[in-house]
Length: 443
Image 1 (cartoon, rainbow, N blue to C red):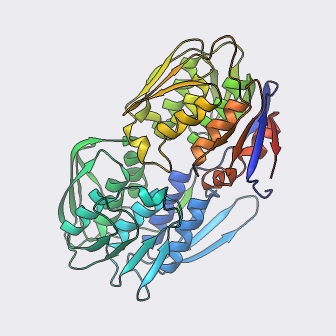
Image 2: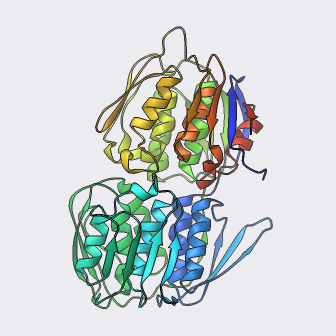
């Protein structure tokens, strides 16, 4: 893999073609690493996602007592000798979680068992440093953990230790992030009394909670669903089991490729995308509604885009991490689009409503942000002018969106600080170039 550039310039490109194997799923990788970390011996993970988030979590697991090994060959293999749920932490350990929100939240749950105080920090004060965690911290505190945060919103730095944690019942909001509930679910089977979780309002990004439960069950953990997305019971004193895990391909990364071919036109094949993934099927449905022809053969899909795109009205909560690239594609549609139910996009690595709209409008798009939705008007006969430099606000999903826009802009678009793409898709530029995109590495 080439060293990632800091600045790229994207030129209007001919129709794309070729076959790409997207990155492995970051979401599966992080959860399987945690399951292996909490098991009492050696687990093996095949095809783990290579990303900044993965690196941050593996380093944290090492600090907490796991032994990590890896092999680079035809099958990328990660071996983890876990802790059996007994954290081995030196006094006053500090864990830098980078810009990895999911890693932070999931670790906060597990680290409520630490006999020593653990401090979580980040160098990304304007990104992860501003994201709230108060709902999760309050739930952990109610269970008996000792927690301390920089602010009432639960922002970093955060200190946590087990205090008098036993288990019992936790009532928590799911409105800001499903990661809070996932964190409690990973913690729950290790508590003496187990845990009953009641979600007191709506749950955002419910498919991530489904994934967490799927991973826990594969790891031998019993989770009782009393009422989906509302009420769960996890018996205590359970043991995570040793397993071998195989990571599937990542649908949000594939969505960036789908947006690229939707905009630049052409036909591409994307491999290793398992059917039946809730988030993945929703992504494919959205691009199909926009006019991209998608066919599937087993784990491989082919996406063809020849005709003008159609505007859409879509519940963005079903495809939350892919909203930026969906919005980018909608900028080239021949009718208006509206992506709604996305208020929590403001709490991601960037404000993915306002920041996305501001930068796309610089390029000549017509994007109207609101509190919980994004509206996109057609660019018109003159197309999208481009000829500007866009700030991706340290957000890998915005990088994907801005690069896609450049593939059919009238003049080249420059995007800065694009090394943040390593958070989820380090080979993004290489893969697009392989498909025929004209991407210039400026610096």
